[in-house]
Length: 402
Ligand SMILES: Cc1cc2nc3c(=O)[nH]c(=O)nc-3n(C[C@H](O)[C@H](O)[C@H](O)COP(=O)(O)OP(=O)(O)OC[C@H]3O[C@@H](n4cnc5c(N)ncnc54)[C@H](O)[C@@H]3O)c2cc1C
Image (cartoon, rainbow, N blue to C red; front, side):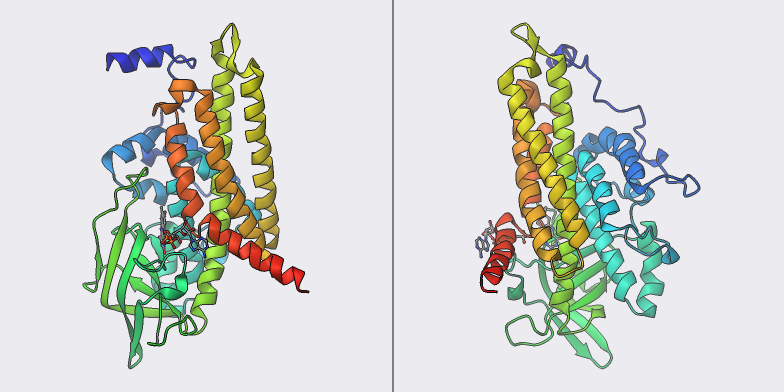
C-alpha cells in the first residue's frame, strides 16, 4: 500500500489529474429530459461522471452496473421519438459511441447490443411485442441481448443449429448459444435460429425469448482478460416459449443488417478508446520530464504519438463514411472498412500510449492496460478483422468483374 501511495505521489499528475470530479455514486447521474443537450454531451457526462469514477469498483465487484445504464438516458438511441426514443442518425450515434468508448469499451458494447435489440423490437415487432417490451427497453428498465453465436458456430453463422419449432400458432426454441453477453442480466433475448432440419441459412428466423422462464438457463460467467462486470455466459434453451420477430427466410438478412449497425457502433467505440488513450499519453508526456525535457519533447515519442493521431483521423473518417452509407447498398463494405481499421488502430494506439507512460502505463491508475485488453476484444466482437477483410475482398472481386 505504501509503495502504491509513493507511486501515486511520484506520478506526474500529482496523484489526480485524471480523476474526474467526485461523483462516485452512479445514481447521481440521471438524465433530465427537460435539459436541452445533445445526446453526445449526455454520453460524455455519463462517461466522466459515472463510468470513469466507477469502473474499478464495477470490476472489483464483478457486477453489471444496471442502474447506471438505466439512468444513462442512452437506452433508446435509434427508436423514434413517438415511441419514446431519441431517433438518432448514424452520424449522431457515432459521436455517442465514441464518447462511450472513452469510458469502457465493454460497457459501450453492451449498450450497443441493447440498442440493437430495442431498435429491432420497436421496428418490426408486432403490436403485442411492442406493447410488452418497447417501453421498458427504451427506458432501460429491461435489457436486451442479441444471440447468434454457438459453441461450434462463430464466424460461420450459417452453421448454427438452434432450432425454432412451430406448434399450432406458437413457437418454441431449443439449442445452445455461446458468448451470451449480459447472460443472466438481459430480459429480452433476441435469438437467431433455424426452422428446418436442412443445413444452410434459408430457413433462419429471429425470435424474441423472455429470459424469465424455465426453458432458459445461463452458464457460469466466462473468465475474461477484462470487464469482469460484464457477464458473458453460455445459454441453454429447452423448448423455451418464443415470439416470432422476423419470419423464416428473412432472418439471416435481418441479423446481418443488425450486425452491420453493431459493427458501426464498434468502430465508433474504438475511436473513443483511441482518442482517450492519446489524450492520456499527451497529458502525461507533457508533464513528465526525462533527461531534462518533457517526454513529448523527445522526437521519438512525439512522432510515435503523431502516428497515433493520424490513425485516429483516418478511423474517424472511415466511421463517418460508414454513417453516411449505412442502410444503402454501399453500407456493408463501408462498415467493414471502419470495423477492420478502427479496432486495429485502437490497439496500436493503446500499446503506444501505454509505452509513452513507461512503467506507469501498466498501472490501473491509468486506463491504458485495460484499454489494451479492450481493444483486442473490439477486434473480434461482432465479426473479426478477418471477416471484415472477406466482406471487403468480395466487393473487390465484384468490382473487378463489372
Ligand atoms: C466480448 C465478446 C462478446 C460477445 N458477445 C456476443 C453476443 O452477445 N452474441 C453473439 O452472438 N456473439 C457474441 N460474441 C461472439 C463473436 O461474435 C464471435 O466470437 C466472433 O464472431 C468470432 O467467432 P469465434 O470466436 O468463434 O471465432 P472462429 O469463427 O472460430 O474463428 C477463429 C479465427 O479464425 C478466423 N477466421 C474465421 N473464418 C475465417 C476465414 N474464412 N478466413 C480467415 N480467417 C477466418 C477468425 O477471424 C478468428 O481469428 C462475442 C465475442 C466477444 C469477444
